[in-house]
Image 1 (cartoon, rainbow, N blue to C red):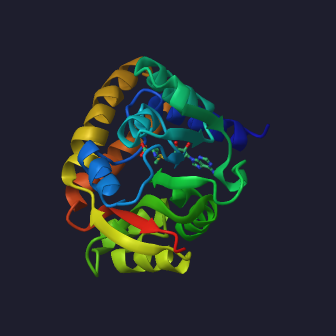
Image 2: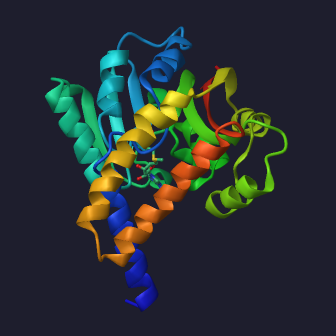
Amino acid sequence: MTDASSLEARRRSRFFELFESVPRGGPGDPESTGRALAIMANLPVQPRVLDLGCGPGGGSANLARLTGGRVTALDLHAPFVVQQAAAARAAGLAHRLDPVCADMRAAPFAAGVFDLVWSEGALYSIGFRNGLELCARLVRPGGYVAASEVVWTVDSPPDEVRRWWHAEYPDIAPIAEKASAVTGAGLEILDHFTLPRDAWTLHFYEPMKARLGEFRRAWSGDTVGLAVIAELDVEIDMYERWSHVQGYEFFVARRPG
Ligand SMILES: C[S@@+](CC[C@H](N)C(=O)[O-])C[C@H]1O[C@@H](n2cnc3c(N)ncnc32)[C@H](O)[C@@H]1O
């Protein structure tokens, strides 16, 4: 292993250690989950649901509870999938949660088997449009896709925040452009809405900040760990200063047919 790749491996390991300790991997909140599900007027009573890029915590188990269905919780990072299975067990829902550790690019499912493909803040990892095409393939005709994605909420974001996002995720775009990606993937948008502030703060950054304080003490002297903490400090600061120009848009769509 080269010095650079071993450094990157250590960085990733610290990053995941941190994210294994928080309830979510990105912005989201129970009200928005309920709002998105309420848009799906014809979801079957016991739907087959895929949570793509389920992340840490118990979001997939919660989806099983809310939909009454059977949820496949898929993530590339095995400990996240294990956490979702544990959350389902704790809620008495183990029989309705299938944990799958896999790359969504090689998702091991036949086309059209799901009634709902759900993906909060995760499709970006393979490109939002590619991710939507994957969702459109995996959901049955007439089934639903719910996906959230980071967006600009204004037409001309200031240079400072634009530069920062350009380095982090150059595909950030205005809501209308992301909506075009949804329709371009062959899906019909039923509704979309911007996540409320609490989805970022109360449910994501507040628990994260509490853990950052603990890890800062635990990792004192660990330059790689402290650098990961510093990156997250900057991300939180950017949100606090620029929440009026950036957001997460939740799209609820349907595969025609
Ligand atoms: C920003 S987090 C969102 C997690 C969760 N959906 C949430 O809202 O809390 C993105 C998740 O996608 C997962 N991920 C990234 N690339 C992936 C891939 N190619 N296949 C499967 N999962 C992936 C990451 O491990 C991470 O858990």
